[in-house]
Image 1 (cartoon, rainbow, N blue to C red):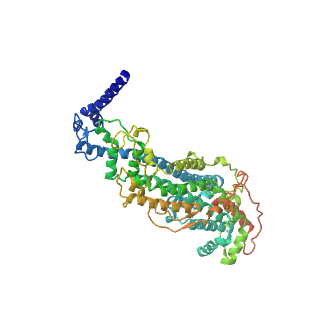
Image 2: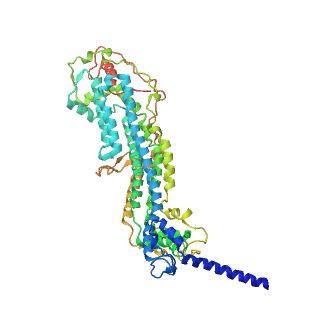
Image 3: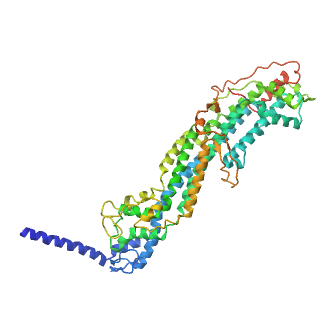
Length: 557
């Protein structure tokens, strides 16, 4: 009996001790004063001891270390505290994809420069001044490709540009293989108009057009998608928290100060409900954001496979020289068709046809060319490496907006278990965690959200993502549906290969097989005849044509 009595006394003393400690904290607000001043506020705002909390608008109105002035200042601080972690996450996301965009953009631009440099160096090395004097044709070709990559079809109609290139090339070569004739501008216009029917360059122009269109549309659309991500995140980050959100955050983070419990953290589920209410509009981005990311990942697969920009641009000099050799080999038949369709040209009075091979400065031999002579890999990397890396980042970014509350309500920002602040006291949080998105906030017990007024900025970014997704899907099929407002805001027209997704993977006819040994080029033997045949180029002119290939490019096998 004595033992039981002693236990009862001990329990009573313990309860009185705890009560006394709590009351002592309220009588002495020193801890609150220290925590409050650490935020940069005037310590004199905090009473030295607990006061009547009846005037408080947000926190519990009991005996309190808080005042109305403190509530207002802590409300302002809450706005910053709520914005800080979201801003850090958004800034990291912006920085990551700004960097990825810059890497891809630099890589594609350097590939273009390297391809031009490779062709130029090879032709200069092989043919000297004869190429240099006519290098403008190829310079213009690469400049047009670069403009198309940067500005799209608003600046360059790719189909028309390629048609003009081959027509110009045909005109130059046609004159070379028929130096014994004079051609007026009108006559050459007739020749140019029949370039497609003549097919002097074989099937190379058709294949190259499809390859270039697919690769360029995919590359520039993918780069535009990477550029869009930081833009969307930046604009969404400008959305301000509503007054009810700020009030809820203040209650969650700083009302424990009023009872002297400055170290008390909110319960996790309580934090989730508050943050889901505050970030309800942002969570509604998630559906279109994820659709956009799926489209980016699908296009990345294309860049690794059939629409590989690197595999198109790196051997483009070989492909062009393949076309030139086709023209050389078929020049007599081409000339016959032209003379039949455009009329018999007048013989030339010039002595050019009497020039010897020696006088042309061309030896008729192709110098060995090694793939090792090509410029180093663009931007010090490869497309596969870049694509693999960005795919990981894209996958990691899915559900970014809907998981923001979970990301914020973690670690040191919350207290585990039941020893946490539930909005009124240190105890278990009993309310159910509501879902993400604006529509679900009608049930939010902690934040008053007007579900009838979606944020205008976020709705506009949902529309932007939806439009970009449609561009990405079109690029996945090899079609350009005009991303021409990138730089100048002008519109354009749809173009592309007309490829449906399945055929893009299986249509191997669209792709050139790079000659296995570029060091052993093909040179056609030429026998010089005494006189030209009627209506066709003479064999002597074919010698000059071979010499004149310095205008354009060697054929590498």
